[in-house]
Structures are given as C-alpha cells and as structure tokens.
Image (cartoon, rainbow, N blue to C red; front, side, top):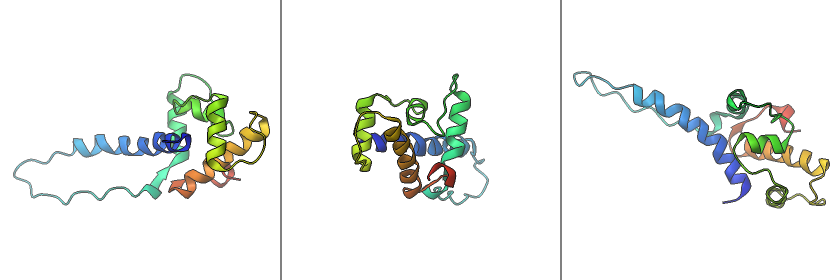
Amino acid sequence: MGIFSSIKNAIFGKKAQAAEPAASAETAPAAAPAAAPAAPTPISEVDVEAILSAEAAKAGQTLNWRSSIVDLMKLLGIDPSLANRKELAQELGYTGELNGSAEMNIWLHKAVMRELAANGGKVPADLTD
C-alpha cells in the first residue's frame, strides 16, 4: 500500500468509524417491525475538511494541515519523513527535484487534496488549487 492510500484510508476510514456507533446504538425491540437496513454512505459524501478539522481539534498540538503536507501527515499518524514525502511525490507524478523543498511540499499538499477529491472526497476548492 502506498503513502497516498494510507492518507486516503486514514481520512475515509474516519467517516466509516463515525457511522458505526450510530448504527450499533439503533437496536430495535423484538416486537418492532424490521426496518430496512440503512444504505451505506457513498464515498462521495466524505467531507475531508470536516474530518481533518475534527482530528486537528483533538490533536493536542497546532497542526497547519490546510497548507502543510508535513502537518497533514502528522495529523493522520503517517510518518512525514523526507523518504515518505519522496515516495508520495513519485506516486502522484511530481517531476521536480525530490529534495523536500518548499516547492515540492506545496505541490504535494495540493496534489493530495486533488486526489482525495478525485477519489470521492468533498474538498474545498481553496485546498485543491
């Protein structure tokens, strides 16, 4: 599994985890008619900004995930080392120098947000361009 897959799973998995407690709390009495099971939430309804904002509120430290790929990775519990950022850059098709420059990191952040949107996440436009 690649670095982007880890990022996507960390974010999209939060949506699934948030839905589980609500589903398990809805136990109907035996005499009640069986309700139709709730349809699974389509992946397109994953609000990336809301999930990351909620995680940032619980982080216990200030992380600028909205513009920093390093802070985004930290927030998701993914090692933000240069080696991992290089791997991510290669996965996403970065063609510049893989030296951890500000240019590379800014490109990575935007590319990750665009890929999350392309994979069904709801991402505000200001985070993708």
